[in-house]
Length: 397
Ligand SMILES: [Zn+2]
Image 1 (cartoon, rainbow, N blue to C red):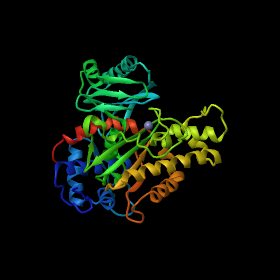
Image 2: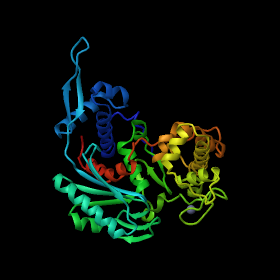
Image 3: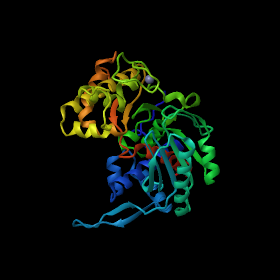
Image 4: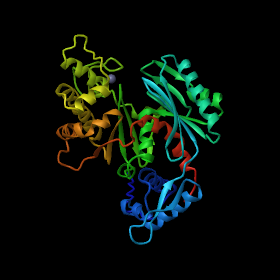
């Protein structure tokens, strides 16, 4: 497999790399403004001249602006910041609980958002999405497209949802219906794939410089996305990322969406952690009234039972990851969604489980890190379905 090491590449050798370099600079300005060109050069592997070219181009496109900082004795520094920009994309994060419809600018800043409980009836949910989208479109005349993230199997070519297990939706022509209702181009992908794309374009610099990684989305279920040489790998009908149901043991604390007590999802999803917590508390029906977020809060504030439930779940996440990276040369594994918030607590147990279960013990392994997409990673995924292609179509810097 061809590898691209940005640290060694001083001249962008393809449009893809050029686009990524541009995104790295834009992300630095978005996250760290006010920041100077020299500071960006210090923190990235990019040449000073490359950064200057990109900054000039981003200025010309009206995305960033330069201003004079305060002097600390000598000449005042010239600093960069984002310009207040117009909405260009609508992202729809349809999850098993809520649906969020939001606008963002080209830099991925969320400008406005609407949220409602996802209705188990796809027509009702779609009608609400259309209603929200139309309202947002009225406010932003430059909306260029809609990206939709779905918790299930998606055919990205047709934009059809093939199967959404949680609601048992099948063969839903969501992209087509959305396109007809709004008149805008629509892109749809599985949530883990969309998050992998967002991580590639909007993640931390150390994530963005990795070209091969696996995204593991821990939610009610367990999703996976694969990035191969800087591209999200879809495989046959988008099913490449569906490895949440691989067998990793027996007697899981609960049954997965398909009824198995042996698969990764049954051991390592949010619902598995909830089931463990309920079991440890001696709840008779094996369920807990708490949400996963509440269990994490309790674990983070030191409650022993919550910690145990979370750490056991992290252990089985690690076992699944070790199966994943066995025999594959992946540079990184990114663990995403709510659980990323508890990373300081769970990272050690998770990594120990990977190490203990690895055949290649002691050899350099993939870097296992938490997602850096913030509080709404799936929404960033949905938005990046529009923003990444918009950015990629800008042409050479
Ligand atoms: Zn399963």
